[in-house]
Image (tube, rainbow, N blue to C red):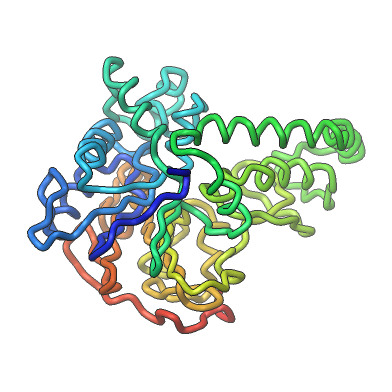
Length: 360
């Protein structure tokens, strides 16, 4: 077995990013017809696209529920970038439920949030460490962020259970590449030539090649990062996002995906209602362009993002808004291609295998 593993045959329900929203997960499972052990009366199977944790109020319960299903074989899953952060002990925003170093900084935005009991951590990490990066069968492929043939071929050679070690290995290669290319020194020279901080939104910098190269090395050298975090390319027109000026931009890899099997991903914070403000930065939503919220997308119209931004419910709670109004947890029923949401509503997906590249 490798980091690319087989999907089970038969009818599937593919669940998007959960991000600690345990109540939404339980409600969705009920609407799909599953019990809390993952059994379905018609023999359907659950598949999760990753990002079980962070930001939401109860990541430990989500991981316990999904973990029990994975252990019993009633569900399958791939790793998301948030699980990789846990495995690598890389504390990020919204992970105060797990990392002590994040508790104080996460309280203003995400509290209250359940913390994982220390005695449960080793088994949880062991289970996550055994998950694949991608799942596939003849008609369907599942990966968290991007199905790129080059990177898939690289990880297909890696054994099951090696995700953490492989990720670290490729991160070391990226760092060595930057050292060999003197990226840090060239970045210092660029900073000396630009009098303002790159965190100052009031002053747009010129294109800084070394800064762009540094960001690209971090994003694209590691194949596991590409598959779990997406594809980035040089951007000659700097833009301000995430508190700093950036010189690489996310791209819709699906506009170059030429193969026949359908691909279902999460990760990209899709909006069910186009009029809603972006939940996680315009870079994510802009990837879909004019693609309707229920539409398949990409060069062949055979890629679908099933993440409908349930991970943004913390923001609505913080603002005193109804958290279920615009942020949803969704599942794609396959082969029916019907979406089911945590509030029980259903919708037929649109434009399957119709090219929408011009609209992306």
